[in-house]
Image 1 (cartoon, rainbow, N blue to C red):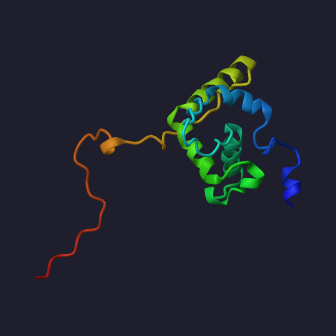
Image 2 (image 1 turned 45 degrees about the vertical axis):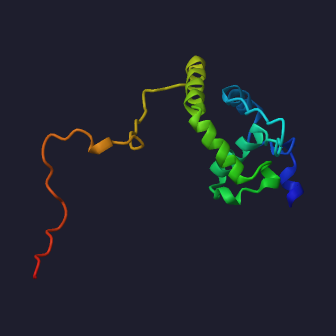
Image 3 (image 1 turned 60 degrees about the vertical axis):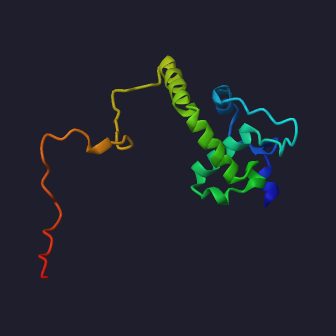
Length: 146
């Protein structure tokens, strides 16, 4: 079964998880790898493409990070999760989103006539601005019998 999974892989990474056109768009946006120490360099860093394959595997299958098959994807789920965290902190995803939107706009494939905007992911700090005191929706507390 393992050989069936690795068929069509590009240097250990499943080609269907990170196609070449996706990799060409994402690779320039990724931050450079940190320099290895000269003394005690540690393990070799997993290639970014393998880490992206791990992220894509989790997104497509919905498995937990710990259940990512390292031999099929090219890295462990923990490594993919750490790299995703680092890339998110570096702002890779908003830049990729902007690039993809501009490509769609240039090709005339971006139709904003029918679109929905969802702000449920935006935090409302301290509940936002309120016009006045809010009435409680909690049930009336029981009287103290002591």
